[in-house]
Amino acid sequence: MTYHPKSEFMRVMIERGFLADCTDYQGLDEALLNGVVPGYIGFDATAKSLHVGSLIQIMTLRWLQKTGHQPITLMGGGTTKVGDPSFRADERPLLTPEQIDDNIDGIKQVFAKYIDYSDAPTGALMRNNAEWLDELNYLEFLRDIGRHFSVNRMLSFESVKSRLDREQSLSFLEFNYMILQAYDFLELNRRYGCLVQFGGSDQWGNIVNGIDLTRRVLDHEIYGLTTPLLTTSDGKKMGKSANGAIWLNADMLSPYEFWQFWRNTTDADVGRFLKLYTELPVEECDRLGALEGSEINEAKVVLANEVTTLCHGADAAAAAQATAREVFEKGGVGDDLPTVTLSAAEIGDGISIVQLLVKSGLAKSGKDAKRLIAENGAKLDDAPLTDAGLMIDAAALAAPVKLSAGKKRHALVKLDG
Image (cartoon, rainbow, N blue to C red; front, side):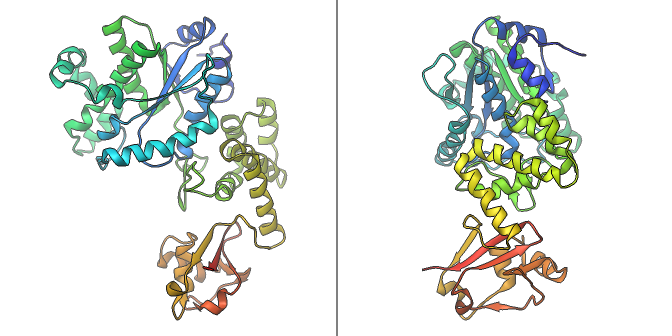
């Protein structure tokens, strides 16, 4: 179905590729025209940072605010104690309240870069669902809220069905998660007039539950909008790389490595990623995405600069680009390269080149490092590495040495002090 939106927010969602599905296009579009619409996304605090996989959600909230509405970032201080079972093969490890609070502090730093939490009419709210979930009385909750849920219907949701079809156990604790998420939407509507919940398309069932519950308990009309679950054109899940998650906090992944992730985007993804992860005009995204040959590399640098500027600031983007130019074009050693600092005690009589490749993150394991060397993929100070048995002693590290895996991944190794 082709829908022609009247509100700026819905137009942005459709034009830029954010929209997977919506519970009521017209109803939400009208609401967006009639005043400031508060909308929320829930984030469970399972790590100290969010990664690139969450960036489409964060950008959704950023556009909501830019088009005159109010984002609500809901931290799952309560729901993290249960763990979202959606499309997972196993139960999440349970975290302590201290770990959860620590993670929330880290995640808050990410949001502050993208969203304005001022007192303006569209100033964002940061809330924690532990505020209402921690105080629940179990019997009252079962009687007042649980009676609105049909187990038959819950079992039909794809996220639950996929787990049961594989005959993997789904604990009662996890089964409760969708009721708690539905209750979050009800509480946010009751307390803050929240009208819309956003989420990845895997959250559709949970979002619909919240809409049904709010309609039954409060008789309020609210909406859900989902974004596509992103994979790169080669089928990989967005947010993961060969070296692990692409974190949004600089203390978990350097701005240079973050920049490099975007610079290494596959040609086919450039236009789509420019629309989703930058604020460049759609026509410019299309123009850059259509470039071919060596020119597409210029478009990738634009993508890397724009996304890094939003996440880490313009100075970090410029420094990353300068380091990349120095490393790739001049074969030099850039200041921003990931650095491994070793103490004399760690080196002792010598440390193997295989260990150094693993420590620097250029290889996942000793086996991986040896394979890299055997396939002529590793370099030491830009010279091919051929001997997997090579030992590096403290004298060899009098000046920092540069390790490389392939043409695009580099790290520095230096001696402490």
